[in-house]
Length: 370
Ligand SMILES: Nc1ncnc2c1ncn2[C@@H]1O[C@H](COP(=O)(O)OP(=O)(O)O)[C@@H](O)[C@H]1O
Ligand SMILES: [Mg+2]
Image 1 (cartoon, protein in one colour):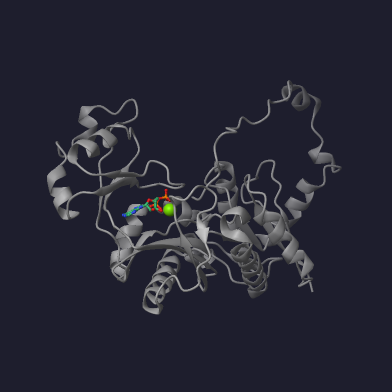
Image 2 (cartoon, protein in one colour; image 1 turned 90 degrees about the horizontal axis):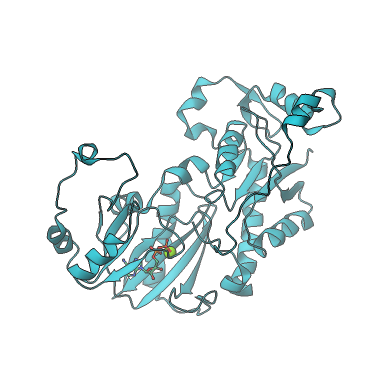
């Protein structure tokens, strides 16, 4: 039996990736895991991984580009990079309503400012002024939450008590698309980690507790009825969004669970946040799920309209993809620097001097949930 490979793309996180890779490799299940290494991607390039776990492409756009091409090669990417690129919290709110999962009332707003070059005539479809009172009335009055439509990591989330406060906050939001949301004065708050659209772990979560100790083990925190609403909602939303690794937040008020934040395709898996108890569950459950997935031959290809237009062949993953044999051969060439064609011509060598500077990074920024 061929050994299949799971690749991992990571950012700064230090605890989950090595624990996960170690867990897969220790099991000797005919599957090995390793970090993906990249130095540029050729169009339609072959991909050696049956499955890739993506923890960081929201911050490294080149990875997102590579991952879309990997899907075309038959790799299963967790989470689907096409959907991850497309989703946002406001679509999630509308989807939640359509799925029958209770969600606070929400309004998407025109942005406060625009990029250079957008002038008054560019905005002829916008009604001015924004009908603020109508929006607040729909939301049931103050307080309200103002937060980004493409948000994450608790950035730019405001709780506002009056029109004055709301306008002051809105005036700070620049070109970011924001939404206003009914504030849920919750009694309980939880995060449910969902893996493989099937396995769930619900954890008491307090975003106001000092980071990173925001997860608490309290086994009978929710009543059975609240727990059922939360798990049903988390599964429904995660399945509808097509994610295999997600965390859904719920605020519980008077026995009703409100879905608050459920597009977290790179959920916090840090051992210091989750505590060793939940961390172990995440490591083991991700290992169980991805090993099964690697062996199942499942692909994401038939999710896409272009799949029916390309002529499939059987690939090394056991997956039907176009041009698999040719691409595998080409990749083999690319991977062997000793081969003549990969030796740089002297003019190329000259052109590449001086050596490029190291990538610039922002050391202060904390890598966080997407
Ligand atoms: N509608 C709401 N009602 C009450 N609290 C909210 C609401 N929306 C957000 N919050 C609080 O703000 C936090 C951050 O908002 P969230 O939607 O989870 O954004 P992010 O993606 O940045 O984590 C939540 O964990 C919750 O504590
Ligand atoms: Mg959140």
